[in-house]
Image (tube, rainbow, N blue to C red; front, side, top):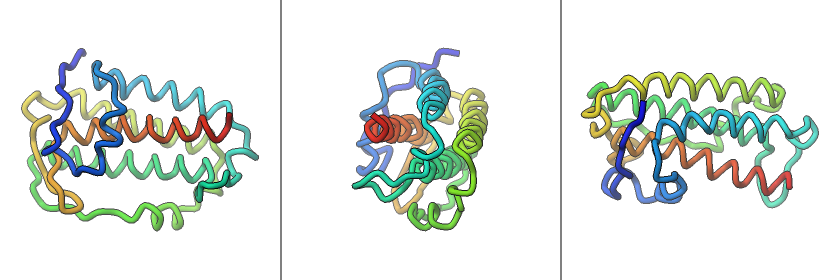
Length: 173
């Protein structure tokens, strides 16, 4: 399915997320989200166990913890998109990403297992996003005190992965 979604306007998300949204190419968003599965698999598949568990200054998370963060965000932003697309207008709280990473023992899993977990989360989000109506992409909800459209959350998912993949590539170069 080719989906012609226009890039979200600044009133569709909190200003902080512009960093991620501008990283998303002007192409089919669902295709971009799908292609990221292969990109993640290739890049993470090339990282050995020692490198994945090492802190690379100036960063404060290992690559496994970064992947854990990406799993968390895939679930949270995907969940927000799901709720908003269903017409749920209940305001949602923000998250403390450092607290999430600190309390989930990502270091006890190997990188391939964490990669599979992220892929499953992304695939579930893709299945959902592929079936919503064109109208639902414009539905809004509130999270962290800001208004978001479903479209902007999908763009944030894509841009967030690109952002962190760029950092991971720099760390292991």
